[in-house]
Length: 147
Image (cartoon, rainbow, N blue to C red; front, side, top):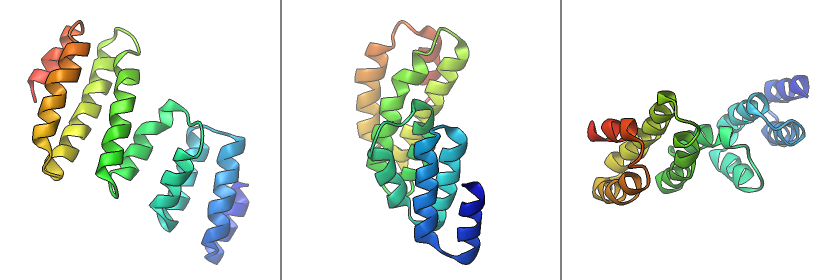
């Protein structure tokens, strides 16, 4: 199917490319087919990518790249997706790397808040949700204090 996608791209047949890339992703959900889909959709339409993402079950490992793409066109939906991903990243174990991954998401959420002048809302959510729910994770709390 990769060859078919490449041939359609070279011919400029973007509608067919999107369809083929989505079929490939449905047959083999995972990072490589999804990133190919993102590449194809990036040439066509980010809205199509978002609609495809919302259309069914998608592996949690793909949420961040989708949120990163979505942040370019709809920051509120991207922030919501980052927030949904945060517990998955923070509760993945007791390793410091999990705290770092969760903190990188918090920084992305904060950056969206700064960019779209919603930093006050970010501060309120940070105080209420993250500090209350994650207070047992001291290393994560120390990272939050650096913001």
